[in-house]
Image (cartoon, rainbow, N blue to C red; front, side, top):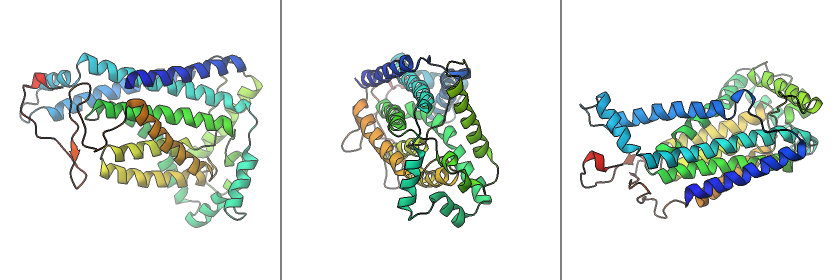
Length: 353
């Protein structure tokens, strides 16, 4: 049921993408394999690495030979479990490709940056929130530190996607993937609701004092890509990657943070809360997003988790876990937030999954 719902959402989103493609007269693209081919390949490589690491950790100490580890991996990943996990992973990547195409075509809409900028200045009593951050944090070291935070996002997402199916219960992993699917769906909907490019385009003077960094070079590249698509929409290399409202750096990080809490990973959750806060600051400081984009991203992330839990069938009400489709039990969290296994009767290793 969970997998069927995930693919139902995916199919509906693909249908929307194909309809939009027909309307704008631009085919669906995966430029250079950047959003599907390379992502699936990277997920496969990380999956293999995680499976071997998990097999090594699950094998008894003193018997961690290559053969024993491989047997543990095979026991942990029977064909059915492997098929379910990879079907969900592929659904995620199909949605991710569709999201990027819809985002690219969003630049064909008239941007409303001036309105978002006006809202920001109203909220901050006539001041630019980015300039206020520059005044408080400075425009030197802070720029590079916050850039590091902002650029850590793609790595975090790649690791979470590949590692999602290694949760103790596979259903929990499906919930993570379903939530991430929904955050891309909801995010691109807000792009079309309020088309925008970002304060770096609307108010470049607010960021003139920042040093040249990867962020400023990427922003210039994104504007050039937008101009190329607008001038030559049917060119084979016409593809844009810039939209502001809402911040999906914030939205996706919110999903990951909330799911860490739902899974009982308390220490990881605390670290992610700090990372989310820093990301929210970085995205405004560097000019990628308006301040109003941040709470919008938080809201999208929260709604995506609710929809993801519904799509996957949800978690148990008591948080203690139940047998999943593959007979696995979810460890419970002790008072310190660490994961501890349940005490179960010993079974032959080949009988456990």
